Image 1 (tube, rainbow, N blue to C red):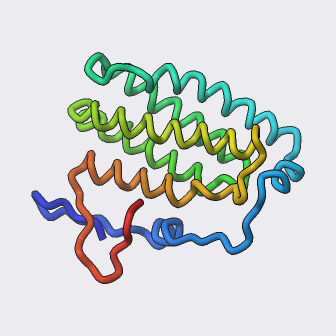
Image 2: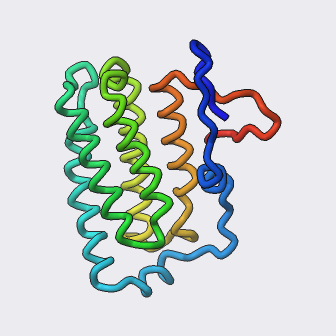
Image 3: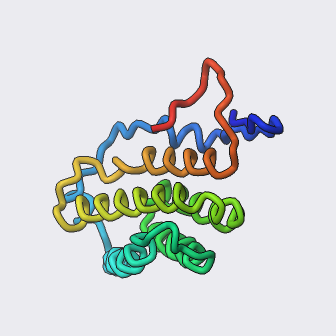
Length: 180
């Protein structure tokens, strides 16, 4: 459960969210094995990810003090495009859900995001960097031992960002999930 310390608003983690955070892929899929299974359409999706990353790099690598609402909206739009593109490759639906969460968080809390833009921008830069490294490990270097290595971590990062932006804090429970 997540609660807001100021007004005691709570948010339970859904069963799906708990499963994502606790997910331990028993059957790891090596990048080389995975790449052999991709069809032409899925390969074109990877090319789209590269193009989106270029735009994301330009959008997130900026001085937080000079960032305006329009730039934050552009970043939100780019994360949405990245999530939609990942969704097209079935193996990456969990990663896509985490990015849809980031996208929704930015879109639905834009006023709070603008007020905390330095923190948010730093966090988004980190997410961007993780995504770029993840893509390179799988599709360029082909060295990822498990193509799902970023899933739980990115989902945890999304929840941390949500906690920070909304002011909601994890409640102390024995079954509390530890976020990365």
